[in-house]
Amino acid sequence: MSFATNRLGGLPDATAPDGSEVRILCSANRGSLAHFTLPPRAVSKAMAHHTVEEVWYFVSGRGQMWRRLHDHEEIVDVEPGVALTIPVGTHFQFRSVSPEPLTAVGTTMPPWPGDGEAFAVEGIWEPTV
Image (tube, rainbow, N blue to C red; front, side, top):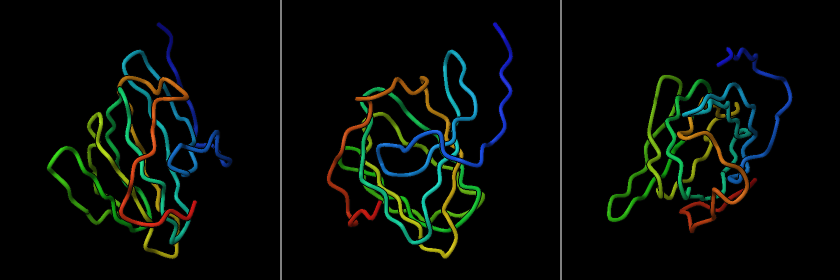
């Protein structure tokens, strides 16, 4: 086992399936950590995951997160200091409602497996990214 150390980069490493910018921070055997950015007043695509669950912690901006799993559905306001979970199979979509980017740090468990993990679902807002 080796140690990993990384610094948040200025440019995104990838675009997430939901359309947000992704900056990969670190990955370990049982989870990975990334920084997500959604532009000001933007709306993500609605997605769900086949095998991973996530925990997000918002660090800047203001917005809303919609989540639906089976018969449970909610919209929560998000801002710095708010954390939330996205269980496996949850349909989710998020949007920025502020003039600054909406950013979050997210842990994926297990680590993100790659293409094909996320799949598009019907959301509640019209995506803009």
